[in-house]
Length: 122
Image 1 (cartoon, helix red, strand yellow):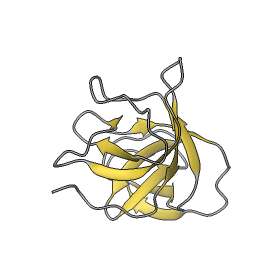
Image 2 (tube, one colour):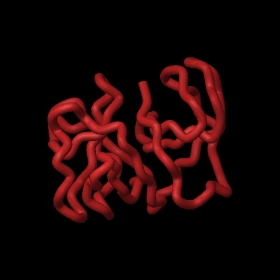
Image 3 (cartoon, one colour):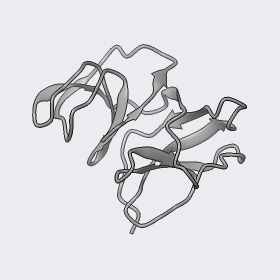
Image 4 (spheres, helix red, strand yellow):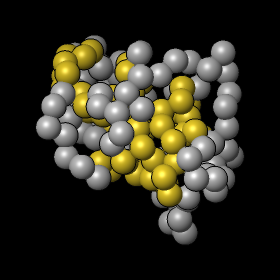
């Protein structure tokens, strides 16, 4: 499962990793220890190109159904692997994937600066 994002800056470098699920170009996924953005469509279990650089500003509207206030700048953005959505709530099993750089707008879109590495919330 993945969160679809829009990357503000185009990737110049990538690493080859095994996709944990079917992913489309620009899907954000956690491939521990990386927070990765697919650079191409990749089938589950196949190897493909992922951007794992830190400090990329990205945006998404794939937000968790109930944990989606996103009203505090620089707060942590979490990835829920069960629903493949972004959350503003630290929850066991979620992964921190970045920090909020623009609060949720009227279209339900957030912007955040992506981390390079992550660990599951215990």
